[in-house]
Amino acid sequence: MARRILRTVAMTAAAVLALSACGDGGEESPDAGGAAAADEGFPRIVEHAMGSTEIPERPERVVVLDTGELDTVLSLGVTPVGAVTTAVSEDFLSYLAEDAEGVEVVGTIAEPNLEAIAALEPDLILSNKVRHEDIYEQLSQIAPTVFTERVGAVWAENFLLDAEALGLEDEAQEALDAYRADAAALGEELGAADGVTVSAVRFVEGTIRVYTADSFIGTVLADIGLDQLQLPTSRTPTFAELSAEEVTQADADVVLYSSYGSESDSGAAAVVAGPLWERLAAVAEGRAYAVEDDVFFTGIGLRAATLQLEQLRDLLLD
Image (tube, rainbow, N blue to C red; front, side, top):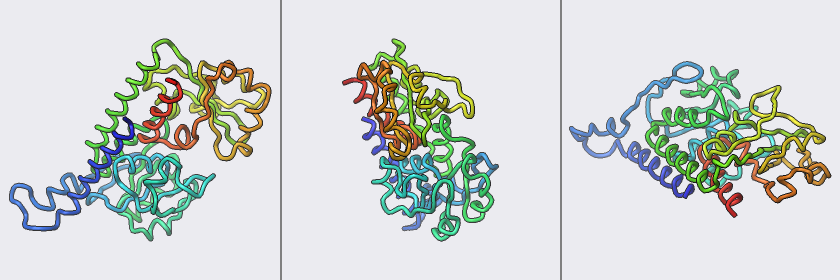
């Protein structure tokens, strides 16, 4: 169901863009206004985290500088001309790779290549203040640039803002409403009202992160209606950090766990093979599930959220 929803949104968005591209042909209709009608809504001014940006025409050459923005544009049927990758891979996230085939890599999230971005002659750049506040002025000299304020738990708001910049806000709202209806339906199927708790565990560079309700995965679990294990946090409200010796604190009715990068580098291999892991009730009772890091943690956006619903339905309803 989720994939059908995304395909429908993509085709709708593609149709909108196709109409825009065809606006130059034929005589202008007195009622439709020719090309002006095809590009209705542009030019427009978009208010965002760094101020306001005028976008003169419907964007056709878009560059995205974070995983959330790549997820957003592909969810709306827009293939960007350029995008960044993560620090642990030279490829785009696995669940986006097929649709992003042929997209030019313009550096990593941490180090976008400004020369490569400029060479693509974009007419819109999408990113966020968290990652790239320091280079906003340089980016805005290349093309109209729109930044969201934060990442993670605010993904739905970011999705709608980016859609506004693309001129696809109606399509975005329709897709978001469909996702939320699907999440609520899954919650009913799972009996979420019975108080099932989920622990979202991620192994990162030798530490164990237990994600909170203020994270991206936390919002998806909340949309389903599942309770999330909440441990005290220190450095960030997004996750608590545990050592390998503290892993039993991550126990819950269901444990979802992943590795950022290779399992040997992240520490996952040693912990999962160790004696403390087996003491988790979820592990002992067969309710601990390895999940794909790209979908549940690295990726952020509508497509990742929708894939989480699909995979949780498969895992938890078997």
